[in-house]
Amino acid sequence: MSKIVMTNVEAMQKLFPECPICHSKEGYKLSHFYPNVQCKSCKSEWRLYEYGMELTWTSQTDWIRELLNRKYALKFWKSLKKPIGKQVIHRIFAPMDCIGGAPDHEKPTKGYIIFESEKTIVYYSLEEKNNKVRIRIPIDGIKQALITTKITPLVDKKFLMVSYEDSYGLSHTLFFDFHNDEKVVKELIELLHYSKNKRTEKAPEQEIQKLVHEKPKTKGEKQVADYLKELGLFWVYEFPIFVYDEENRPRVWTPDFYIPKLGMYIEVCGSKDFDYKYRENIYRKNGYHVIFVHFYKEQRKWKNYLVKRIMEIEELRYSEVMNMINSALR
Image 1 (tube, rainbow, N blue to C red):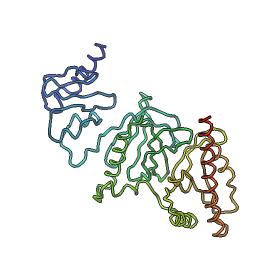
Image 2: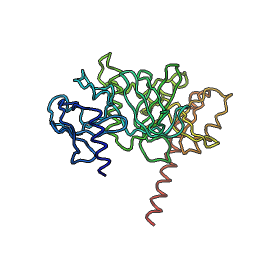
Image 3: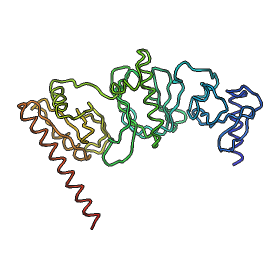
Image 4: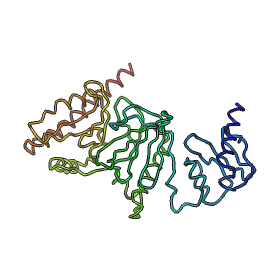
């Protein structure tokens, strides 16, 4: 244990000959809260990571306290100064393990997300030492950034989902496992809003829906959206979901509408010449309730069909739940 302790203290001394806060050269010692390192002068404490450092305690009462319990890159601590507004650049969110989604990043990797600038966040993998997996995400290109449990009905866990367009206009969707630290993820989403809306000085709370929703594109989608509104059903457009195809390969699909209140999805079928059976089978295999609305049919027909399918799915769910309850009580 002493070897590890000395390594932490020596690493801090090497990285910061002067304390980042009080600029003392007295050095550091092991904190009572292992594995933290403490400044001998001002008693401020840090926790070291391979990607950065976190201030865990300080006696300072000014703006320094706003940096408590937040991870920042070493570069930030080496040139510490009072930030103007929120300290966004160099902020690190970890652990933040990418579990897949983008075409160029299918294997799960352990890593972290860092604000490289107010315009870009970057995901780094910690698993590849010499050739780190690096994914740059332009903040202005982000379409959705939210916490979801809807990756697959077979997994009861929350994930961070980020959908965005890269500099070439290509769409990507990534899912991150944040290890149940929901408070930190909500702060990440808030900072994304802050960075995106800073130039227009719009409050993140007032603009939250703009990162979550896109607008329907086709005539059929717009009419279905209007009808859902008539029914009092709030919808999310093109909400990504995780599926396994017929060869058990991981894929990310985006049904046209997701109805959070009902836990159902809607696909708008715009042409009778297209075979939708393949997608129906894949959704069914993965346990999703997806209603295929054939818009090209008479308007009254597709509306009646939509309501009928919603009622059928609700009745099926009720029956399944009652069977489970009755089985448990026997």
